[in-house]
Image (cartoon, rainbow, N blue to C red; front, top):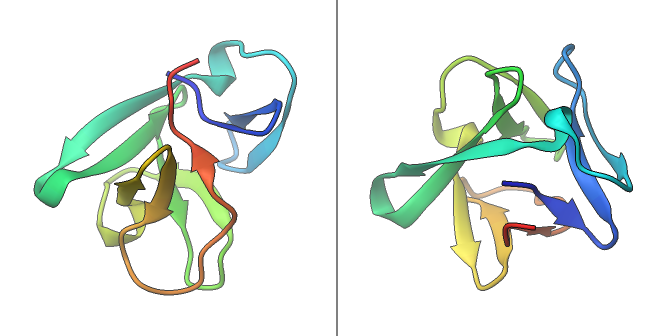
Length: 96
């Protein structure tokens, strides 16, 4: 599946850096959604690392295990970090 914000796809670099600046989805823009307890989800990048939102709001994909910082809750077409704290802008979770 892909994640997007507006007209741009979310991509994970091999370094774990995450950007939302791709107009076209290729391999690095593909994510695997994994169900977690409580109806939450984790997202694994093409590079087999989990998407994570850090306490300050930074978004990375460099985790090998999906723990609380790597867990997201669905709120309509929007994903929010399941752990309380600063939140980045929403991410559209609908498969494109």
